Length: 225
Image (tube, rainbow, N blue to C red):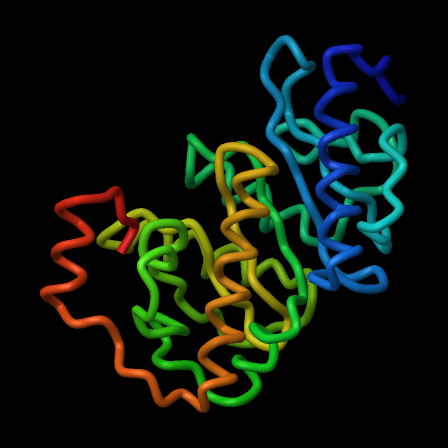
């Protein structure tokens, strides 16, 4: 039985719809590909909101977003995305994560169908903002959409990473990123997709940043690399 939706969720639902529409309008998602979730605070009812299965992110109906308990139990709204297990495992593995975002962004998917830089980093360190806003992005080998093994592999990557991860790349499907808000998750995704676009447009010819340049960034700015 669905539970009454707390009014404190209204702003979160509206923000998820805003982010979905922005991504869709700029071609970062298409058709019914992609999903968004947000972890809810106790005063918002707890658990998290996630986009429904087969939903188009460009036309999300806030009232239809699935409300799910931490254990995956449906609390209200439409049927949750088939990536529910992956979102739950990321939240369990990264306590500070408040939003998980998955898209089928064109240049990142194209990169995964060609040859990534290496499995532990799909892109070399190319730009300062890539290092500061994105960090390392390992590749997760191809599985069927919604396969629970993806969640296990992502959780293992998060646990074994030397520096905190904020993104992974699902081969032939697209990036999954997480951050402390929908807006920051979207900004991270944008930076990652733009870096992939630059890498492909330049035929993979630019040299990576030198270790001394990376060290300088670490010393002067917050960097995830």
